[in-house]
Length: 142
Image 1 (tube, one colour):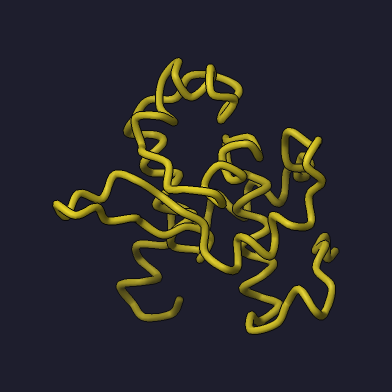
Image 2: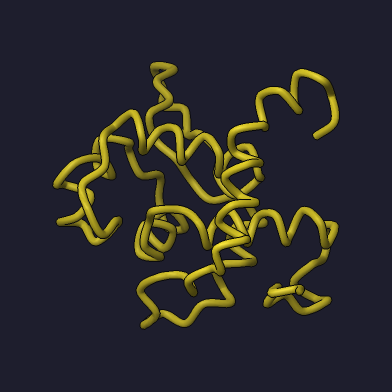
């Protein structure tokens, strides 16, 4: 079942497989849309997302450890939704949206707080890909 919200125009430059994988990763992530709206405007530092601060900012429903936040953000980088922002000193603790992420984000109305809840099999598929990504990358199949 294809749950993609993409129109052919929105897919410009990206394969359907890439677009669907990115959408699935976003729907399964533990963050609210407000985090990605903030990232569309400016880079967001990791400490702003982690812990109670992330909840207070409206970025996630519950406090997440910095380690968990970084793992989840690294997965979103791997599927093409985020990129690290490097400051003048070479520090890379901030994140921004990629053009693909901006295309997908535009499909969600401003008043919508969270992504549509994915079915269990999408969550399972995303988690398997998350766990297997290092092996797949190492073997050159990604």
